[in-house]
Image 1 (cartoon, protein in one colour):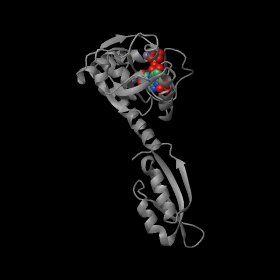
Image 2 (spheres, protein in one colour):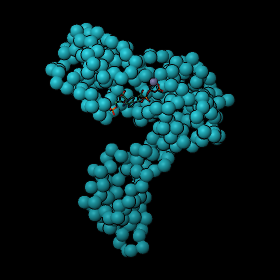
Image 3 (cartoon, rainbow, N blue to C red):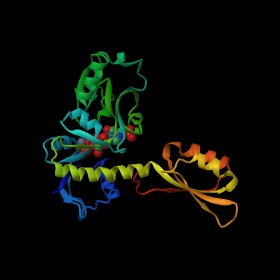
Length: 284
Ligand code: PRT
Ligand code: ZN
């Protein structure tokens, strides 16, 4: 029995999707330039598809699970379940108007023509805000629509904002924040679910590791209590004596979020020779 996963064939999610499999210790067989391949060392088959097709394939159980952007998922509204947010492919679906246009709020869109490749999400956004406007669905190059007189405003994906900037547009509203998610078919049998659980266990260990750093430092023994008090550790920090009397080496794990804050406080408390090392996998 093999779990079938659908990932993007090429594009913005491809590299991170393949890397996620690799970080989970799943090696793909000889090359990936084809429709499907399998893993050498894990019961998994990998299908390479266009991102827009992935939710439908998972709903139809052609693939058991898939990696896709939330933007595509919510626009298509297929019957699949999200099992994990993956933390890559981050972007936002935003409303943009001409840089010199007056924009005072969603009301400014009333009666306007909005070009987008996301008609469903734009419709929901307008309805939620009780604004009537014309949605003009186009299939690509949305950002040029205002410049050529096709629309007053656009709704498109934005990450750095440079595409909007280069086209003389400004971002004025966020319709949706999106990232890549792992989705699953709603009727997986127990065997496939067990493989998915194994895969999820690995994904979570990889995500934990990315959010945490291993830290080693030297501390004078008279400052040890204060320093240990600053360090959470997985259970509690490890403390080992240094060859030099009166000093200890302290090892612990720090979360990315409070990282810099704690490093500064450790230094102020007398810690020296602070080393910070990436963690490959973390199981709690
Ligand atoms: O061929 P296929 O249909 O599979 O690929 P695609 O061309 O439809 O999608 P692709 O590869 O461009 O994007 C795949 C997914 O990546 C999207 O569905 C999003 O979930 C996610 N993603 C993250 C993005 C972006 N960031 C992004 N910036 N998708 C598209 N963009 C585009 C955006 O449409 C605009 O044209 O990049 C431009 C804006 O980028 P900035 O950096 O200039 O703001
Ligand atoms: Zn696509």
